[in-house]
Image 1: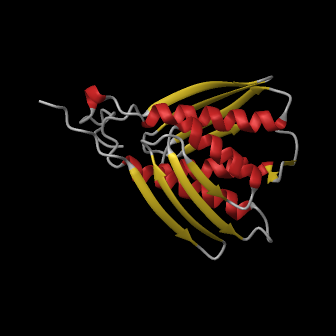
Image 2: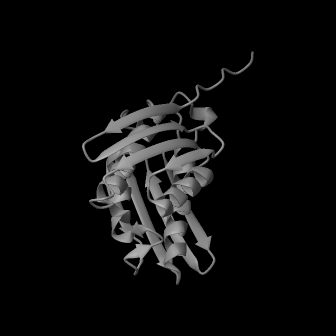
Length: 202
């Protein structure tokens, strides 16, 4: 008897406030395709490689109050992405739950560890010393990852171990995060009906 095909995991999210209007579509079991416009080109680039290295498809458009500051846009995109991942994961049965990755980026090395265990916590050390990289205010990187961690209710730990280029530090973090998350949300077919927790709740 042929094995039953696993359901495709996806989410559509509309998050509109007085500060940002975000519309996104996410398919976890995708091919790394993307169409992204946040109004911040460097953030677009990071989210594009996030999707490609994460192996998921992402369409995301954000119209934020960039005339005020980048803060609302960056933080709210993190929150929206986390909520979309949470929605797409569904009951989380059969997922590997946790993942980690060590990403070299030329002279830079970054580490990421993720646990989709239902509790939001984050620690991030970017070692970025420039206020602006490309057109992105770098002090907002922790806000993005905190928003994501809270939206998906996960532990997110990110650290640049060393590096020279601030561009490479940020890019290595996003790539490491993408690949750690990709492993965590992947499914183990042997355990497809089992929740990866002895508590019976994630």
